[in-house]
Length: 489
Image (cartoon, rainbow, N blue to C red; front, side):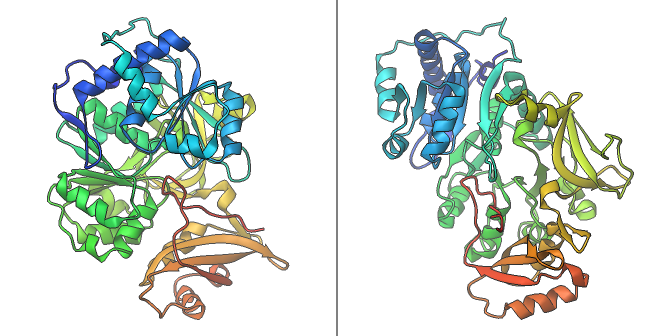
């Protein structure tokens, strides 16, 4: 089954709104009608199996185009609206792209070298000229066929195109709905972009259960997020670590607000230090906090920690989601014993087909059906997994291996610290030295380099104390809200 047939089944309440918000609304009925018409037009004009780029902020334009491309049997390639011309040219050349849906703002900025570009106005004109189309379900459709390519950001190399099938999307959507227990009454505040797999998972799950979403592309204006949560009676909020850090330590109005409809929040996209999870629980004891872990290569989600286990398993990324098998293994692929560091590997119907036009990277990442994540972790006696670091993040100090996350965990526990980044810098004697970059609350003037070192000396071994301390005025994040770590030269 085509994943769009799975997500937009026919027994839909005719007028219920899927998209809520001050700028745009969209009912399930109208969404289905628009997708059916556009998918038929794409199929008739361009055939099937083509790579079609989609570049737009979260909007009705994105949602309709995204679903229609996959429904038509083509492959959607959602890209960051902030993409640079060089990056777009690379994707276009690699995918032999001749057709794309792009926001007019993106078109004006990039002037892309694509034969046919459809922006918001052109799409509106096309839809006006099209007759209503029947929703046709192709029973013979191969669910293992390619549905989308999501490009992962590359800091030291070209980005990789993660190939996801219709089956991948269906499997991950079903699993997430099961453990979050989502229903048609759920309303999600969406601050995550849809070109990011975490953001897409919100779109998929709420489409499937007939819930609703509120799109907010301006997280920087915290007041608008707070207003959305209240005005639209949002039951859920999803964020990456920086979202929670900023809400908790940069916004007095958030922690002092009440959100009577908010049932749960989810956090993924990197490790959120324990102190922030505890702070959230103290401020909002009636809101379930789901710690989650995943990768684009797994369509989005791999594990979760149930909220009821936060008390005894705080710091863990949990266990595999329904339908996913997780292991922590040594260099020989043998499961490690509790307390020993190994690599997280995963198996399930959500694991990608591979990297687009990169057989070598695919073979290095998928071995005997297992996805090798590159993330290091330990397991405890109960099988709960605790993230250590990525292989490339480990710092070697005089032959000793140091995990940046351990030091970051200590520093963010200092009063007034909003964020901390630990990285290795060249050192003539030790090979590498530890550098800490801190973002502090602007009202706290007591945090100095000496104060940081003194605090660390009470919590850490001497070789783990940062030798270099820098201060930054804001958390450096990418377009998905995930923290960016700049490599030192």
